[in-house]
Length: 168
Image (cartoon, rainbow, N blue to C red; front, side):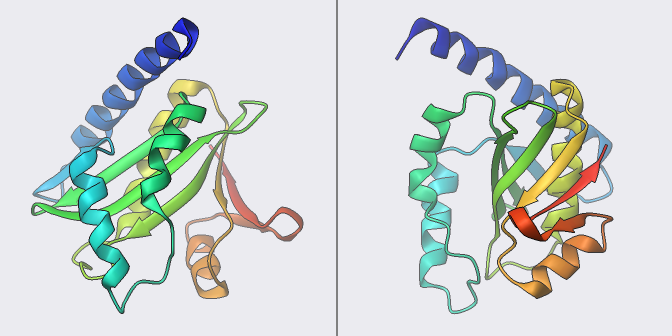
């Protein structure tokens, strides 16, 4: 790994942690909610989702390491509630750095005590603000029902490129 990559990883890791602290202090109405970076424990817990009959998404979270290596400026969130992994999210800035895209989001298929998308969107908004991005994108919604759900948050669908966006 190049020294410049290590430097970028360290700088953005601090920004990610500060972002999670900030959003945690802003969302205090939900008790027992923890905003963390994706770690081995989160990946082990997400690995258990594969066996669930309720699973809708088919993200392979074991590929997190390669995504991490490729995108040091990435957005990531392991959202825990009452010591249960509620969701994982992973994204990155757009190529021109004016937006922050969410490439993967998955709710724990067997833990539905909280709505995770709205919380993830709020965390993305904080991270985008730090990066100077003025747009949030949700890439490749898994079906029309999910796309319509995202639209209830003010996101607009771009059919040609299969993503939703909102200006921030």
